[in-house]
Image 1 (spheres, rainbow, N blue to C red):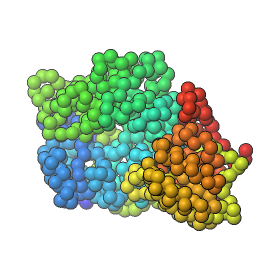
Image 2: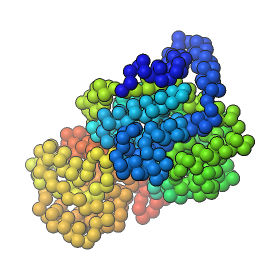
Image 3: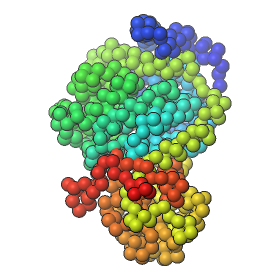
Image 4: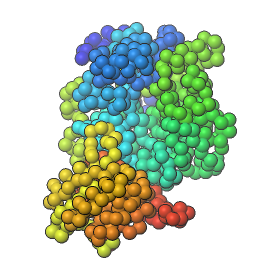
Length: 606
């Protein structure tokens, strides 16, 4: 890794000039304002020296394949050549001068924390060696729960709906602080979290348990707490997906959702967490690829809507931080316009960062052409560049672009961090049904357990499978537990195999995942055996409505190890169920009626 002296030389004085960016703790508001004005003057001077091509590149945040910035595996070189026209991250930076890079598990960026740190350093070195030596803002989606790009041995926390079930602002702040410290240690300085959507639609296929819940004020409290945690750790938090993606039955990755809320309902529901995030000083806000006719009746997605992004977000809500698009490769933003028009229209709407276009070359050239032909002004690009560079300065990227392997070892996945995640998870597990006080199970009466059910792939690729994690945790707590994966759509043969295995068990633990008719049949037939059955909703808590006869039901809101181990401790009586539903569960036979209201949750004392 280059020395600090090398960094200073590579940045050609920019680092020194922008050192004022680190003075965030001015003695009073007057001094702070002066410092901000000084910083802006220096940033504007820097921007004035940038050629147009570099300005355009700085607006993009792009994916790139490989575990290394300069020497990825051949398969990743091939993927980069096919999709981006370059071999490596370093070549992409040299060619397009991108201002940001986003990490994905599937792009092979996140093998382990030490490798990620090396990748981050390689990316920074490649950019700092270019003229003007601008640091790169590295980002990822580390929401925790069901969306997690950096896996074990990093600390993995419960997801948003689980945190909503715990209801603790202190826990949300702790999650943000620890997760932020670990991201910063590996060179990730912008996290696309927390989700600020209020999930009022149980059929929502894209948000669901990624939301803190269905109550706007509670979501707002927890969003603000997580923002405080992340940004206090030196990582930019990102509230998403503006103006609110919580009431849709269409996944914007594959379609173009329409939100039918009135303007009045938006003010009372969807807007509340975003206002809270802005009050908390949120560094960035991500747009949604949704139609919201009450806010803009043009038929354009919010990502491309001037009335929504400039009129409402900038004007009415007073937000002057960085606005980043959701991925420009998603169908929701590509339905109406071509890939060459989308980035231009996004900038005209008020966006600053253009995230992950399908073709960087098409998008980059489209913006360049739009400026040269007068559709976009260079001054408009400068506005966004100032916001982006302000953020980089606030994150001290000009002064501290590199991370150290010692810092990774000292920070990531420490015993204290892992213990904190376990404690938070214990406060989220929600007991919904407990007939005849079946739970906690007795090691004397229910010694032999069968753990079966769905085994969805790990969100981060490093945990699970759920049945195995539960069985191992229960065995460690004094039971003899056997795992049997039955999948999300068990066949008749698999159901028969499960029933045969269950006959030899003292009790059965079964995980449901977005419950299907086949899963429902499996659980019903297990209950019909007369064996004690404990069902666990390992994703959506709404599953319980489909199983009225199950004697015990828990909700974990995700299937990562930390949540499953906490559920095992609750089942064994080593921890009390303390979670309370952050969303209502409607009856399966009459969705207009509520089966379990917000705030519902049993304890072992009643």
